[in-house]
Length: 593
Image (cartoon, rainbow, N blue to C red; front, top):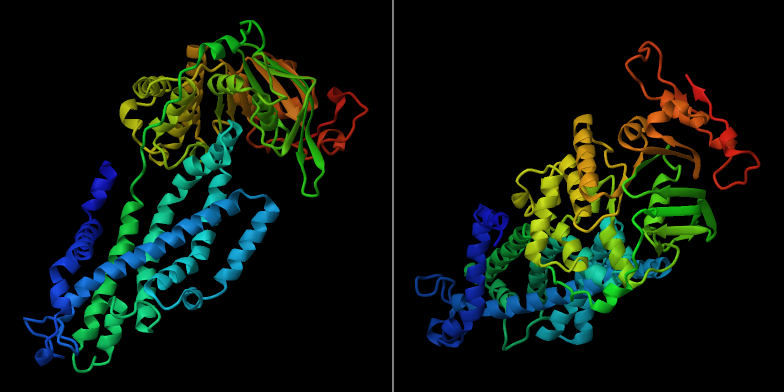
């Protein structure tokens, strides 16, 4: 049991849930056994007695003890509530997950059906279904359960859609995870806490609905009885013996409170199951891995073009004929304004673009792997081990429901075929390398327990869990102060030195890139406008490159004058993707003071 869960149990709410849960459980399991005889024994002479020590809730019109009947009715009431809640949750999860993974047209149809059902009051739907299945306990359970499916369908659809757009879900899909496995391993765990809370709250509402149906004579029928039937019988003489009606009401209220608090309690718990290691790589697979010359470029792209599908179904080209090569151990920086194609170029070179993109190139190779076609299973394993991606927002890239240690171990366990203990030791080494103190303890923490800079360094450590040959850092210092930026870049440099991997650094800051990289690639409008050595920025010829350099203040900048800015016009005033008859190096870029 986790420390966090133990602390939660010690709170007033946790103690209340434990005591209430134990009482309800004991009444459900042992109530009919211990109090069944008293609940059914008739005593005509003692009929309709008031509250007394012998009968705390009084007796009914046949002389049966009402307290015993309330306790015995716990089993029927709780089991019907759990059954109906289970039908609502399972049905809602299936409908919501299906709605989230369906194509857009089918998704809108399913969501429209859910909206139509939600427009009717939930209890009205329950009454409608109870007429279909009949006025029995089973019919009432099915009616209430099916009436709750739209509620959970909408909840799960909304939660799943928000999680499905996260970077870690996209990464799982790109690495070949099936829709079912992606839903079970990545989507459902992240919607589980709010789903648990809503399930428990719905259970309390379901309990009340069963009591209402039985009170109206549409639920449990004689000779069976639940709290709703007892409430109906006691309401007839509430002015003579108030406890005859208040007794079942107190049981309904207290059990509903326990259900509600139980959801809040379980929302604190996180799953930390071990990963299942896959079989070791066979000798045939090992022989199938081609050897790559050490001097060969890690990434080589020739005339790379990337297009995306627009809303009208056409294709819009965003990267236009980029040629780029990264040598082993080289640090290359790609700099440019937002929308210049930096991230798209890097993602295409790593094969991380989704199915909505069209990648065309005369040659696009990563260490002997053709990235323009679907990689084989062996190549996918190589890509998972030899590529590392560091996103600019690690909080959305890390799975919030899994510990940092589990996420670090995954690459080594699943793709590297390492044991859990060996992967954990490697994770500690990786966190230590990126200067995260007390690494063994940090492995057991969740991403939100890390600071922004530590999360970014944890992402770097995650890339070191394989055998990286290329580290793509997509604006890794965005929204970080200069002190934390230095820590992140130092960790990135240490990782590069320890592995010998090449780094492709994407940034808006040409000063940062020039101080960290060996070579600078300047992009604008989906094209490379200039390449030059990082220590030779003074030799920049293109006006856009000179404009980027002029916008960076230095110690000699006149503080009485405003900083220069670059005009918003794309190169030569053209929209990206249009043809050009002039040399790109002659494109006009105006620097406005």
